[in-house]
Image 1 (cartoon, one colour):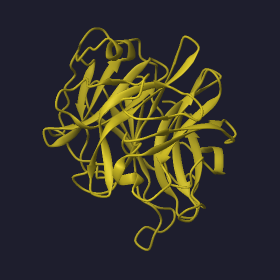
Image 2 (cartoon, rainbow, N blue to C red):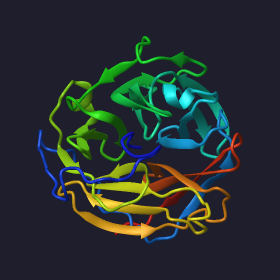
Image 3 (cartoon, rainbow, N blue to C red):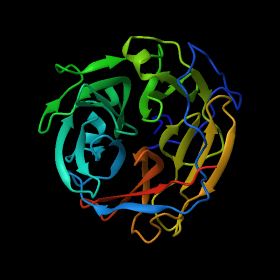
Length: 315
């Protein structure tokens, strides 16, 4: 997703392989265990249409109500360069239940869902900055889902945050097991991941629980999620002459306390899909049990479909 490299960018080293564990207070009790990336994947939704017909970029779960929120670049020429996004609300079966348009927000690389006071709030990138064919957010935004509404970064009800001064390419994910927010950002020549309690971000805190460099030596970046003390990174590209089935989609786990790479494994989830581009990760809590979910785009240009698979085995 880096504007310095390609459309989705390459996973690059931050300040080297070493990680920094910055403590801004005691972290919330982390969920036990990490996902076994070699375990088989199970399908959740298969080739479902979103509101618009572009490629799925990322998704997140409202675990309390059994909904999926998926984001993609909005239909229309120039939408990617302007940072215009479409947000679709889905049932767990993949039926479209509603949508919003987010104008000038970014590329939709990762989103989070927060339930508060009976309202569903989305966390996304915002304040998009153009970089040729695409645009990338330089702030985080929190707003309530309102079916049919079109918003801009300055719309009423949109709250913006900048936990890391001078950061660019800011995106976020929320771990529903701990209510921690993980922000991926670019600064000082590389990408890093800062971890905060959600309440700390909302109060304006700039002190992370952890801040680790992104590991080097991986492929085309496509999304991330966190569960407990581990971060999961998705990489890979669409099928093509240089990337035939079963493809080059890998998942890597990183210990957020140290920045150490723990495991990396090829996934063949949805290998029979045409096009098959990995797009987005999220944590689902199903009956209280966690699932590490990854998204896959398929279908032809102008008629893209979204599929989601999950791994649930812990070690």
